[in-house]
Structure formats: C-alpha cells, structure tokens
Amino acid sequence: MQALYETYGDLVYAGLESHAEEITKRAEKEDWGLNKKQIAKLLEKATWKKPKALYDAALTLWQHIGDDIFMDFNAFSSLVDEQIKKHKLGLGATEKKAIIQGISSYDAEAEKVIKKIEKLQGDKLHQLLNHLGCTEEQLPLFGYFPTGKSDEYIVYETESDLRDTEQIPLNETIVNYFVREVQPHVAEAWINLDSVKIGYEISFNKYFYQHTPLRNIADIKEELLALEQQADGLLVDILNF
Image 1 (cartoon, one colour):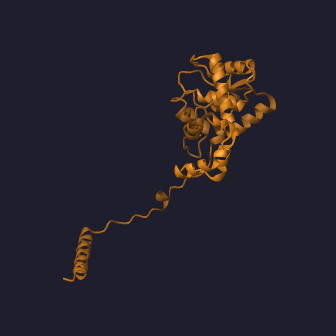
Image 2: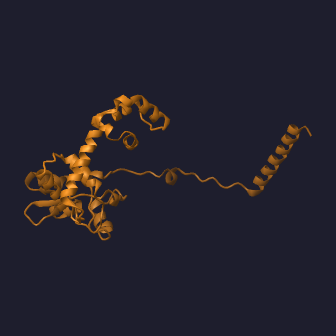
Image 3: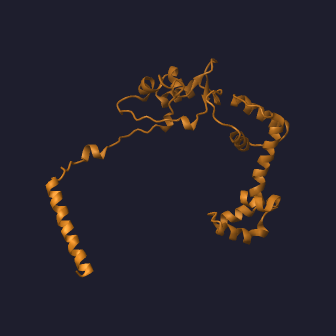
C-alpha cells in the first residue's frame, strides 16, 4: 500500500481498477507475494478509505488532546471517549483501540491498566470460586483484586511480554506452588488458570535410553588404516597407475 500511495497519491481513494494491469505486473516483478484476490482487494477504494478515515480521526483527536504524555492509560482512554463523543467522530470500540494502541507503549512506572470492574456475589461468585478452586480471600492470586467496595473486584490488563510459565509436579497444587515460588519474587503476578494445562511429560532419554559403550581406540585405528588402503587402491585404478 505504501508503494502504491507513493506512485498514485490520493488517486488510491478513488480506486485503482483502471491501473489493474500495470499493478499486477509490478506485483509480480517486485515479488509482493499477493494472489489475484489480494491484488483485486488492493485496487478497491474501500480498502483505502477505511484506514484513511481512521487516520483522519486520529489527527482530529491529536488536535484536541495535544502532545501530553499520560502515565494513566485509563484516564487517557476516558479522555479519548469524551473527544470522540464531543466531536461526533463515530469511532467504534475496534477503531478506538487501533488508534490508542498505535500511540501507546508499555511503561513499568505507569498506572495499572484496568480491564474491567466486576461485581461478584451470589451464584456468580460461587461458580467462579469452584472454577478456580480457591477461597474468596485467594481471588487476588487469580487476578481479581478487591476495590474496597462490597463484592466489587478489579481485573487488570496483562502485558503479554511479561507472561511466564512454570512446570510443577502433578501432586502439588498450583496455588501452593505460586505462593511459595512465584509471589515472593513477583508480587504483582497472578495465575491465569485458563492457560493451565495438566498432563504428563515423558522424557524418552530418561526412561528408554540404552547406553552404547565406546569402541576400543585400537579397533578404530585399524579400521581407519584399512579404509586408507582401500582409498589408495581406488585412486590407482582411477588414474591408471
């Protein structure tokens, strides 16, 4: 798309169907790796207008929000919502997320990013406790942090680059292992139970490996000398000595 925009400029927003043949040849020559369907999609004006509308909306937000750096993603997201509504930009959740992610980066010093605030009580709470296999006091170990209000919990966004995995014995509970081996070193960590896999790991080398003793060095030397004699004989035959 960048190459085509550099060539045709704003004509891309009217559609490039009239340039289909030359673009197809260029795609083959420059090895863009596109099939006919993908090239046809690239020629449609809708393919270009959608990202253009997103870019224009981002510019409008920039004009009204400015260049300030926010260390609280939640406050920034709320401000973006206000500006979208105020200026009637008509951005959906997906478009808003695309813009915000495009201008955001991870910072360990920033405020935690709130994913949702959830009410947990009655049957909903009991079902969650049964699913997690924990008590209500242990919910923070699974990412549900009390807000201080009755039955209200915060769930934070995770940073994928900080995720880690552990392999633990099958006869030990995940919670006990986590409290003993992980929490003292990473106080803000929690268990993502949905990613847990329970099963067996069989080491074939450990259980099925059969040791083969090393050959005697004298036998190896004798074999090498025999191979050397064979090679000399072949060389004589080849050169007709």
